[in-house]
Image 1 (spheres, rainbow, N blue to C red):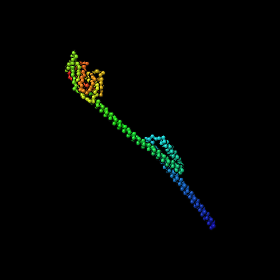
Image 2 (cartoon, rainbow, N blue to C red):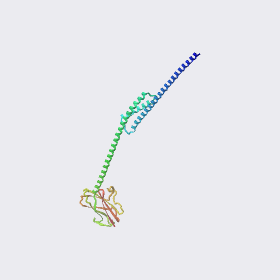
Image 3 (cartoon, rainbow, N blue to C red):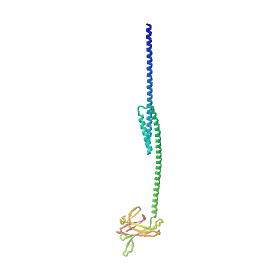
Image 4 (cartoon, rainbow, N blue to C red):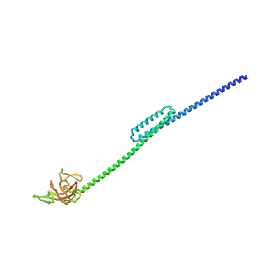
Length: 302
């Protein structure tokens, strides 16, 4: 009986031992699987984090590349080709990083490509920035040249205006001016003799006598003298076809003579026969020469 009891106790102990071993093994297996799963999760998290970082790097590179497009620079064929290659590489990297599973080797390869791409884009952007600066400098030089040309043109215009004004003053100064102007009314007898009168009914013609003011600037040459006659009502007495220019406008004249001017105090005379009857009142005579008013006089007829 005692031996039987000892045999049972020994069997129970063996069961307990093996059960303990099984539990320990199970715990160890669970611990291994837990640690392995944890390691895999950590590696997965690390890989995803690295992938996200690389994707962000690619986005930054693309933004840097887009910046140069905002510059008003005409790219050479070489720079256009570089930019196209960079965008192709960016698209490839984006596609690679979108894959669900990436090995450590894939990530390292992507890192190297991104590093090279960053350097490539940097050099590309530096070249475009250099061109932009050159263009800016050229624009400044062009604007400066335009301003210089404009300033020169303004000076030339002012000089031309000054010359025109000076020429106008010289021309005005060279124009003949009348002095000692007198106006007389005459009737003509049957004998042809002129008799001075002061009544409108007797008057047949007006005679203007004048001298020329000494003027060393005036051309010693032939000059046309124009006369305009106005009746007491202010009407011009002239033919419509007889035109000349003076004081900057076209006008009609009543009579015209040509004189030879020698600046020698010569006296000149102009006679004007009225095709109509004279009326009472004041007749006005204005003389012109060289495009300017020469002098003015008048006479009152009774």
